[in-house]
Length: 368
Image (cartoon, rainbow, N blue to C red; front, side, top):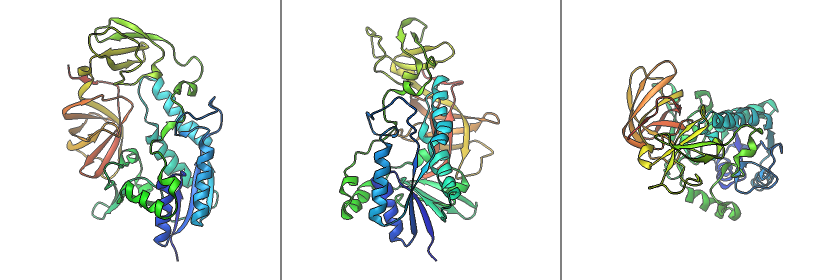
């Protein structure tokens, strides 16, 4: 009897070719797409590609066309409430606290690999595995009895950083057919099958279909405040802390400095933006909380690893040790640029994803 796979389809080339590869491998494939846009935000027209926005209608139609051409069923799962309660609320709360959120980490764990397959089962769909077009790999370690998440063979497309908050029970039934392929191989397959339009689509996709995040917040959530330098001198006025992130240089509105100034710290309690020269952006250590031990059990002693502090960051060598029940100290071998509170940090040993956590605002140490 054929094994069945539910494939999360976005309407793009990666998920479409994922479905095709699984069909060719003999699986009974069903496509499913989550709908998260509810029209409650004052955004009538998308200004850029994104997951959340009115452009979702086109994505749903594209996913349906893919399934029709592949000859497989397609279902739309409505998760507007779950997205609002888990992703949007997290995004806004994190910004309000003076930190910088990473909504993709939360969306992957709770929505794409959580509510989406769970809701599909509730609606009567039966499947043995769940698959997506993410560039990552899964293996099983027999001695430890744990499933392991590994980075993709194509390092330029690796998405393991965004998957570090998955759980063992999620990995157990996941398939990532693209983990051992390059993006060019996937596009070539799409062109061969006649999916020219998908192969030619632009790559970038953001969280929101607008650069104006302020419309996601309730009126009165943010207000103007002081921009100060690292010695406390007032240099100007910011338009609201949600418009800034650590390392930002543009649109600060503080001309006349002797050298370029960047956002060094966001002080939510005082509603202040602290700016300074780039050298103050380098940090040698940080505190990490909300750790999710994925491919290995929680270590009982300090260990060496490499860590990525954002998706495009090159994993840097570090020493990790426990501080208390909830927090870990990470000491890098060399200073790192723009260690940003609220962002995810993912730990690796070679291509193995050990764990993921959240950089905390307390006790940030700057190299001066």
